[in-house]
Length: 269
Image 1 (cartoon, helix red, strand yellow):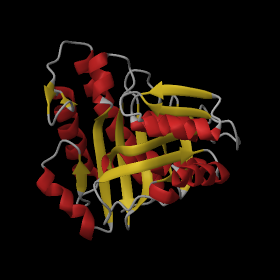
Image 2 (cartoon, rainbow, N blue to C red; image 1 turned 180 degrees about the vertical axis):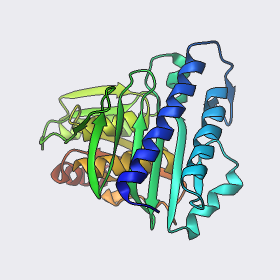
Image 3 (cartoon, rainbow, N blue to C red; image 1 turned 135 degrees about the vertical axis):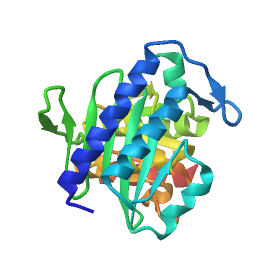
């Protein structure tokens, strides 16, 4: 792998190409199918998955890819790889179908099982975030300029985000214990994470199922690069190499004390 700056530039380029394709689908009519239960999928998911994977393979030959809409038989490649890409071609398909704009193209790179670099690009709003724990996280403006992002400094009475479609009663009970002053619903795991990373919210918490590894890697890298905190059960970071494919009991917070407060409150539930 080349240096982080070059890798991140390529990941941004690929994510923005994916955004262009998603926008073309979003502007027209599309058919909605369902993978399991009420989990929707569209041609935008599948075609963007193919485009992003193809371009990553060309830019980073030999680096394996775990992508949501790829064959599940390929997901095992992450276990033996020093580096691995995680791709969610359309994070927030429910929001895409509802046409509320809360969806994103996400690419993450994990090294030795830890989130290293990430891009979250929102086709409808045009906002793009990128970064990682070894580099500064930033928002990429339409003119190509980069604005470094940072989380808020709040430690109590946080402005909290919850999933628009997955929020549980346990999540709301937890936020009540924390004294959250404002609770806002939002779609897309990536968009909620970067909202915390750039200080537009203080906390995102999800008790129970919180998505899959491709929902976590890119956003986590950006959160860490901004100086915020990202943890799964008990506050520990996800293991993208040997951990389960699904994420649970997720907390993304602006400060370490806020993470500690969430984890302590979770233990009391």
